[in-house]
Image (cartoon, rainbow, N blue to C red; front, side):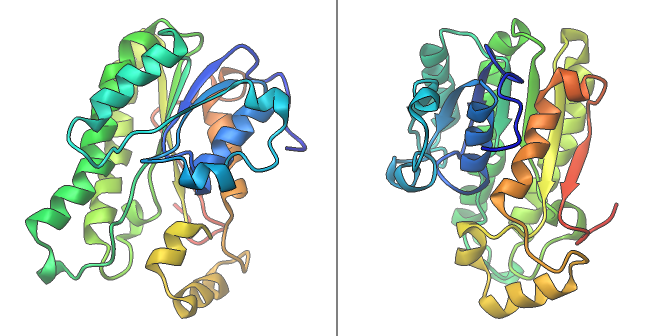
Length: 261
């Protein structure tokens, strides 16, 4: 990727979840472009990673990439992924990017059932907490360690109809980010989050109509939807002690002016 400092994360070990496609894939590729060694959770399978993450990747970057698969919607998925990450990284982790998450479909509030509730909260909350808890001992011994979580503009504005569970789960992520930042500061771990706006990835291709997306783009001051590549630099910024060493407990909005805090 052009424009990135190829030595910014040289020698650093980075874990990125939900890296098979979309924002996660762009973030993993950006860390690799900056010299990092990346353990990428590609999702339940390598299906999307072959097309979105690995396509056109230079051999030198591919050598610094380890791919893992795990179903984080399954009970115990976070704990199993933590064990796999530690085995793959030799127990050495400097940066954790918690990006995996889902909406699971638009469901009206009166139609939410236990299965829908569990599906969204298991992936967006329970497994994020479980994975982070499992990796904290390694992060505490890391080099200038940092955690970067993925929240959402929906956490602040409530999302659109049918996304109440998703929006609330991302609000949890934002508040949990601030709580972790306070708790882990004495250990030297900075914790921040990136809050993407409407980003044109498979997520919105699945859950939003073209008419809705066109209307959203027209309402954004920059007059376009975001891309996964628009988001990636914010993760690099928050993960780098050189660039953001005195920043912790913050949620950075990346949305083209769609929402201004």
